Length: 213
Image 1 (cartoon, one colour):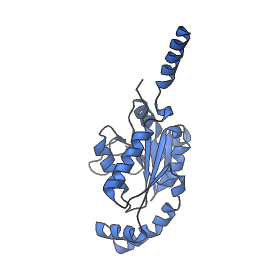
Image 2 (tube, one colour; image 1 turned 120 degrees about the vertical axis):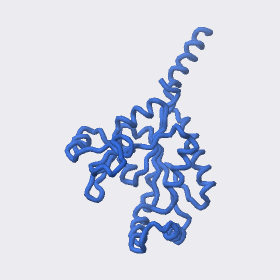
Image 3 (cartoon, helix red, strand yellow; image 1 turned 180 degrees about the vertical axis):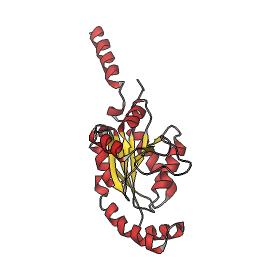
Image 4 (cartoon, helix red, strand yellow; image 1 turned 30 degrees about the horizontal axis):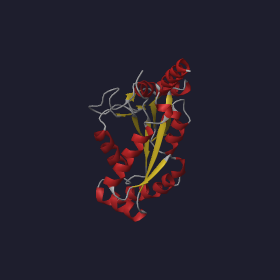
Protein backbone atom coordinates (compact mmCIF):
# COMPACT_ATOMS: atom_id res chain seq x y z
CA UNK A 1 0.00 0.00 0.00
CA UNK A 2 1.30 3.43 -0.92
CA UNK A 3 1.84 6.02 1.81
CA UNK A 4 -0.87 8.15 0.26
CA UNK A 5 -3.57 7.94 -2.38
CA UNK A 6 -3.26 10.13 -5.42
CA UNK A 7 -5.56 13.03 -6.18
CA UNK A 8 -7.77 13.57 -9.20
CA UNK A 9 -6.67 17.14 -9.95
CA UNK A 10 -9.21 18.91 -12.16
CA UNK A 11 -8.21 22.15 -13.88
CA UNK A 12 -10.84 24.18 -15.71
CA UNK A 13 -10.98 27.67 -17.18
CA UNK A 14 -12.25 29.65 -20.13
CA UNK A 15 -9.93 29.52 -23.13
CA UNK A 16 -7.10 32.01 -22.68
CA UNK A 17 -7.07 32.10 -18.86
CA UNK A 18 -3.79 30.17 -18.66
CA UNK A 19 -4.94 26.68 -17.74
CA UNK A 20 -2.76 24.83 -20.27
CA UNK A 21 0.37 26.72 -19.25
CA UNK A 22 -0.31 26.08 -15.58
CA UNK A 23 -0.90 22.38 -16.27
CA UNK A 24 2.47 22.14 -18.05
CA UNK A 25 4.20 23.91 -15.19
CA UNK A 26 2.53 21.66 -12.63
CA UNK A 27 3.72 18.55 -14.48
CA UNK A 28 7.24 19.98 -14.76
CA UNK A 29 7.22 20.65 -11.01
CA UNK A 30 6.16 17.06 -10.23
CA UNK A 31 7.27 14.65 -12.94
CA UNK A 32 5.30 11.86 -11.23
CA UNK A 33 2.04 13.60 -12.03
CA UNK A 34 0.11 11.73 -14.73
CA UNK A 35 -2.10 13.38 -17.33
CA UNK A 36 -5.39 11.55 -17.78
CA UNK A 37 -5.49 9.77 -21.16
CA UNK A 38 -8.98 10.14 -22.60
CA UNK A 39 -10.95 7.66 -24.66
CA UNK A 40 -12.44 8.80 -27.95
CA UNK A 41 -14.43 7.48 -30.88
CA UNK A 42 -12.63 9.68 -33.42
CA UNK A 43 -10.11 8.11 -35.78
CA UNK A 44 -6.40 8.22 -34.85
CA UNK A 45 -4.37 10.91 -36.56
CA UNK A 46 -0.96 10.10 -38.09
CA UNK A 47 1.54 9.34 -35.33
CA UNK A 48 -1.05 8.83 -32.60
CA UNK A 49 -0.97 5.57 -30.63
CA UNK A 50 -3.69 3.76 -28.73
CA UNK A 51 -3.13 4.33 -25.01
CA UNK A 52 -0.71 7.22 -25.47
CA UNK A 53 -2.62 10.16 -26.96
CA UNK A 54 -6.02 8.49 -26.56
CA UNK A 55 -7.71 5.16 -26.06
CA UNK A 56 -9.36 4.77 -29.46
CA UNK A 57 -12.70 2.98 -29.22
CA UNK A 58 -15.57 2.27 -31.57
CA UNK A 59 -18.84 4.03 -30.75
CA UNK A 60 -20.36 0.74 -29.56
CA UNK A 61 -17.35 0.07 -27.32
CA UNK A 62 -17.51 3.58 -25.90
CA UNK A 63 -21.24 3.39 -25.16
CA UNK A 64 -20.77 0.00 -23.51
CA UNK A 65 -18.07 1.45 -21.24
CA UNK A 66 -20.41 4.28 -20.26
CA UNK A 67 -23.29 1.85 -19.62
CA UNK A 68 -21.06 -0.28 -17.38
CA UNK A 69 -19.99 2.77 -15.37
CA UNK A 70 -16.41 2.65 -16.56
CA UNK A 71 -16.16 6.32 -17.54
CA UNK A 72 -15.55 8.99 -14.90
CA UNK A 73 -16.91 11.61 -17.30
CA UNK A 74 -17.87 11.76 -20.94
CA UNK A 75 -19.19 14.17 -23.55
CA UNK A 76 -20.19 14.32 -27.20
CA UNK A 77 -18.07 16.92 -29.02
CA UNK A 78 -18.17 17.73 -32.74
CA UNK A 79 -19.63 14.35 -33.68
CA UNK A 80 -17.34 12.19 -31.52
CA UNK A 81 -17.46 10.87 -27.96
CA UNK A 82 -14.73 11.67 -25.45
CA UNK A 83 -14.37 10.37 -21.91
CA UNK A 84 -12.05 9.52 -19.03
CA UNK A 85 -11.71 5.76 -18.34
CA UNK A 86 -11.97 5.00 -14.64
CA UNK A 87 -9.74 1.90 -14.50
CA UNK A 88 -6.36 3.51 -15.30
CA UNK A 89 -7.15 6.45 -13.02
CA UNK A 90 -8.03 4.18 -10.09
CA UNK A 91 -4.83 2.17 -10.55
CA UNK A 92 -2.76 5.34 -10.69
CA UNK A 93 -4.15 6.97 -7.56
CA UNK A 94 -3.90 3.70 -5.61
CA UNK A 95 -0.19 3.68 -6.45
CA UNK A 96 0.15 7.12 -4.84
CA UNK A 97 0.33 9.21 -7.99
CA UNK A 98 -1.90 12.15 -8.86
CA UNK A 99 -3.85 12.34 -12.12
CA UNK A 100 -4.41 15.67 -13.90
CA UNK A 101 -7.66 16.33 -15.80
CA UNK A 102 -8.33 19.10 -18.30
CA UNK A 103 -12.14 19.13 -18.40
CA UNK A 104 -14.96 21.69 -18.33
CA UNK A 105 -17.46 22.24 -15.52
CA UNK A 106 -19.70 19.43 -16.76
CA UNK A 107 -16.77 17.00 -16.60
CA UNK A 108 -15.93 18.28 -13.11
CA UNK A 109 -19.45 17.49 -11.89
CA UNK A 110 -19.37 14.00 -13.41
CA UNK A 111 -15.99 13.21 -11.83
CA UNK A 112 -17.14 14.65 -8.49
CA UNK A 113 -20.21 12.39 -8.57
CA UNK A 114 -18.24 9.27 -9.55
CA UNK A 115 -16.98 6.54 -7.22
CA UNK A 116 -13.58 8.28 -7.15
CA UNK A 117 -15.06 11.72 -6.53
CA UNK A 118 -13.99 11.78 -2.87
CA UNK A 119 -10.38 11.96 -4.08
CA UNK A 120 -11.05 14.84 -6.47
CA UNK A 121 -9.52 18.30 -6.18
CA UNK A 122 -11.07 20.86 -8.53
CA UNK A 123 -9.53 24.23 -9.34
CA UNK A 124 -10.98 26.90 -11.61
CA UNK A 125 -8.72 29.51 -13.23
CA UNK A 126 -10.20 32.97 -13.78
CA UNK A 127 -8.73 35.76 -15.92
CA UNK A 128 -8.09 39.13 -14.23
CA UNK A 129 -10.56 40.80 -16.61
CA UNK A 130 -12.57 40.12 -19.77
CA UNK A 131 -10.42 42.67 -21.60
CA UNK A 132 -7.29 40.76 -20.64
CA UNK A 133 -8.89 37.47 -21.64
CA UNK A 134 -9.57 38.79 -25.14
CA UNK A 135 -6.06 40.25 -25.35
CA UNK A 136 -4.52 36.86 -24.51
CA UNK A 137 -6.61 35.11 -27.14
CA UNK A 138 -5.61 37.69 -29.74
CA UNK A 139 -1.88 37.63 -28.92
CA UNK A 140 -1.79 33.83 -29.22
CA UNK A 141 -2.38 34.36 -32.94
CA UNK A 142 -3.84 30.86 -33.19
CA UNK A 143 -7.43 31.71 -34.05
CA UNK A 144 -9.33 33.87 -36.51
CA UNK A 145 -11.38 36.84 -35.29
CA UNK A 146 -14.54 34.77 -35.74
CA UNK A 147 -13.17 31.92 -33.60
CA UNK A 148 -12.02 34.37 -30.93
CA UNK A 149 -15.51 35.89 -30.81
CA UNK A 150 -17.03 32.43 -30.37
CA UNK A 151 -14.54 31.60 -27.60
CA UNK A 152 -15.40 34.86 -25.84
CA UNK A 153 -19.12 34.07 -26.01
CA UNK A 154 -18.46 30.62 -24.53
CA UNK A 155 -16.15 31.99 -21.84
CA UNK A 156 -18.92 33.54 -19.75
CA UNK A 157 -20.89 30.29 -19.65
CA UNK A 158 -17.76 28.59 -18.32
CA UNK A 159 -16.98 31.36 -15.83
CA UNK A 160 -20.55 31.31 -14.50
CA UNK A 161 -19.96 27.82 -13.08
CA UNK A 162 -16.97 28.82 -10.93
CA UNK A 163 -18.98 28.04 -7.78
CA UNK A 164 -18.78 24.28 -8.39
CA UNK A 165 -15.05 24.21 -7.68
CA UNK A 166 -13.05 23.66 -4.50
CA UNK A 167 -10.63 26.48 -5.29
CA UNK A 168 -10.74 29.45 -7.63
CA UNK A 169 -7.55 31.29 -8.65
CA UNK A 170 -7.40 34.63 -10.45
CA UNK A 171 -4.52 34.33 -12.87
CA UNK A 172 -3.30 37.92 -12.83
CA UNK A 173 0.36 36.87 -12.52
CA UNK A 174 1.37 33.49 -13.95
CA UNK A 175 4.29 32.84 -11.57
CA UNK A 176 2.24 33.74 -8.48
CA UNK A 177 -0.70 31.65 -9.67
CA UNK A 178 1.63 28.70 -10.21
CA UNK A 179 2.91 28.99 -6.63
CA UNK A 180 -0.64 29.16 -5.24
CA UNK A 181 -1.58 26.13 -7.32
CA UNK A 182 1.34 24.10 -5.98
CA UNK A 183 0.50 25.12 -2.41
CA UNK A 184 -3.07 23.87 -2.87
CA UNK A 185 -1.89 20.52 -4.27
CA UNK A 186 0.63 20.00 -1.47
CA UNK A 187 -1.97 20.73 1.21
CA UNK A 188 -4.66 18.55 -0.38
CA UNK A 189 -2.27 15.61 -0.55
CA UNK A 190 -2.34 15.59 3.26
CA UNK A 191 -6.11 15.23 3.59
CA UNK A 192 -7.03 12.42 5.96
CA UNK A 193 -8.77 10.44 3.23
CA UNK A 194 -5.61 10.57 1.11
CA UNK A 195 -3.52 8.82 3.80
CA UNK A 196 -4.55 5.15 3.93
CA UNK A 197 -1.95 4.23 6.58
CA UNK A 198 -3.34 6.59 9.21
CA UNK A 199 -5.99 4.20 10.49
CA UNK A 200 -3.42 1.45 11.11
CA UNK A 201 -1.14 3.95 12.86
CA UNK A 202 -3.94 5.07 15.17
CA UNK A 203 -4.73 1.42 15.97
CA UNK A 204 -1.07 0.90 16.86
CA UNK A 205 -1.17 3.93 19.15
CA UNK A 206 -4.31 2.56 20.79
CA UNK A 207 -2.65 -0.80 21.38
CA UNK A 208 0.42 0.90 22.88
CA UNK A 209 -1.80 3.02 25.11
CA UNK A 210 -3.72 -0.03 26.37
CA UNK A 211 -0.48 -1.90 27.06
CA UNK A 212 0.75 0.94 29.24
CA UNK A 213 -2.52 1.39 31.10
